[in-house]
Image (cartoon, rainbow, N blue to C red):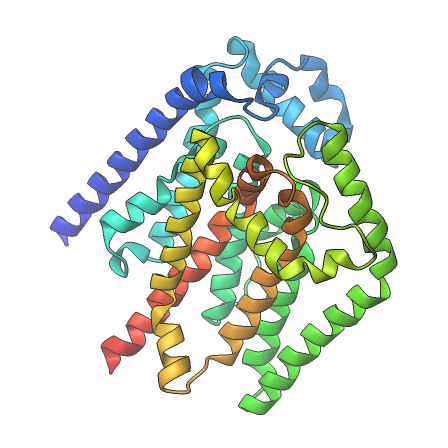
Length: 362
């Protein structure tokens, strides 16, 4: 036990040191190569932003208010961004320790994954992505608690949902649906067939809703490309040239928006190359962590229906709504992905933990 505690302390000392190094790198090197989102704007905002109470329901105004307080120490620098690094560090530490994930995955691999460049850079600075990490971690813990049979909703979960609704309201419906599916399946569906029926019903309702609003989606899709093109942030052509192209291109587009840069983009830009390598590592990690789940499904014909449908709804739903924000620009894809990436990592870590328990008992 003492040896484990020492290893635990060493693990987090290493991780904190890595976070600090990324912060220094982000401010003094990465920030010179590309724009660090709106960090400069937030940390140079007027203190009067605090008295504008619209920050209670406007994400940009909230970041202005927070940034204006931190920016008293001198605009955007290592010191003013340090509180956000500390917040991110303790958020990650809290949930990894809470579920004892370090006991179920190689610690070097876990440290490596938690230290991926873009993930750390965007959550080490004054950014919406740092807030995204916080609420996705807390809501992720709620999903994992539900899967474990603990249906207690606490103040921190309500606060996290509040932040989610302000910063990324499009994620909330699918997280709520995932929680609903887990709760109903565990409490009221005693047979596999009932669980499957419920899961298919929820997916069907989502499909019907998408069909009913397809005209609105088509109009919104056109506006998205115009927005990216007008801002000069589009580096790719418009995929949605005809009605319903948004839906036809969705399977490929969801993958591209999550992955980020294409092979040709990786070959032309160093930052895109790093992002592409990072995405490859993430996909390999998900395959490794989900290997026991997939093995039982393919070779033993065993499926945890509750896990399958709740994961499918949360992951597919969020990926679908990330797709229009990440399809036109690899930089935007990687940056916005940071808002939900840790949630996905938690879900797959839980898969590893669950199936290691099963195999250890076997």
